[in-house]
Image (cartoon, rainbow, N blue to C red):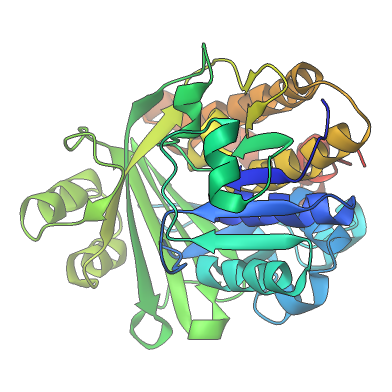
Amino acid sequence: MTQRGPVAIVGAGIAGLTTALCFARKGIASDILEQASVLSETGAGLQLSPNATRILAKLGLARPLEQVWSEPAAICLVDGTSLRTIASVPSGRFARDRWTSPYGVLHRADLQKVLLGAVEAEPSCRLHLGVRIVDASRDSLTRTTGKEPGLVIGADGVWSTIRNHVQGSGKAQFSGNIAWRLTLDAANAPAIFDARNVSAFLGGGSHLVVYPLPQVRSFNVVAIAGGDDPDEMPDRALPQGEWRKQLLAAFADWHPEIVDMLRNAPEPTIWPLYGVSEGNWHQGEQTVLIGDAAHAMMPFAAQGAAMAIEDAFELASFAVAGQSLAAFAEHRKRRIARVRSRGAFNRFVYHARGPVKLARDLVLSIRRPESLAADFDWLYGYEPLD
């Protein structure tokens, strides 16, 4: 991997902004190109596990993030029908002690504001808004930025344009799952929602994740169930009527308080969940994909943002060390494969039915919280190459 000039980063989401800061930390300037004329983060809540917060702290962002996130006391698995707690993994102070970094939950917009503020304060980072990249050639990008990039980084998400310029790259594929996302005012939330913890309510073929967003006095709620691909749209507002019926049908057998909440909640946003299949992440030594552009995954391990943050940090390290993009991709693919595997396992566990559900509950109920936490040492305790 050679550096003949600044890097050109396409996409100014979490992946792109983090990448710019990681390269700046290594003394490499960057131009960040974003097609939106104004940065406005969509979605609602976000979980940042210790493997992500460890990197953000290295970028000097620990203090501003601590002002906008909360650190849940535990991550709890709860039966969606009986509301019985099946198991819990301690977090809070425990996470800081065991994994040497916090577990935080916050609004996506707050993370983006922190990243954007850091980028704007960094002289070696230049943000170009309202720039749509169709031709990712060096000549085209040079005309846009006024500088010839030494490396083009596609951080432009699951519908990446840059991925089209990488031969043998993966393809966006509908997962068969739909996420309904909403933010519920704490004053209107059911009493079963715990303001201290992340709660994953489990049911046959579906699950619901809830955690507090203290900054906006709300709860983040994500309901996930199987569904049909709605015209291959990456996201769209949930139409009243049919989509609400599908949501209620997926959770019909759940506890009445949860069903009532879903029936009466403000209009959610529907997010068909897409992944990116296995494929090449780079084109020679000129272009590389990171984050969702390279390996969008399902949210069952809550690691999408964390993997993008890890990609950004380690790509900068590989670049400064003069290692090839092939070496970077090989290194990261091993990590991504293991995280994907954990996500697939979680989906199986979360959506279990019948005898499998009974066996799940029995196994989890006899394990101590500290033992469950040890299962995440490889994930949360990860030390990135620096």
